[in-house]
Image 1 (cartoon, rainbow, N blue to C red):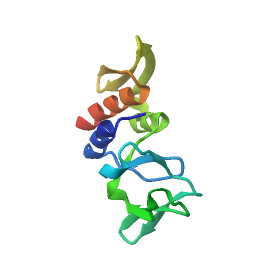
Image 2: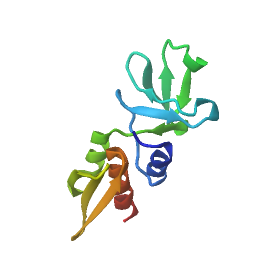
Image 3: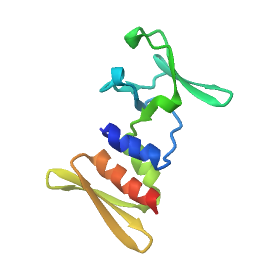
Length: 132
């Protein structure tokens, strides 16, 4: 799973999140540090009100949350979501020692990114793409 630092870097790079069932996220508040939430039609639903998106906690007593604005949620994209965002620039994923290597095409060149976690390697590639 992505670290909050990497997820924050993706958000800062302008990677947009359209919340959907199955997505996971954290909340940028000290009292919720380390907690990961999943959007589900049963417990956490996405609500759109005028110009604001809210993540509503339905029927849960955990943390006594009713809802949080999307701005305080930090999206933790899954491996397949990161692959989709990289798109046709992705050349491959392979084992590299104790970690994973993602190779992408950037113009006429190839670039590789290695991390201990496949999602972190995909995120590094996506951050490089977004920087160009």
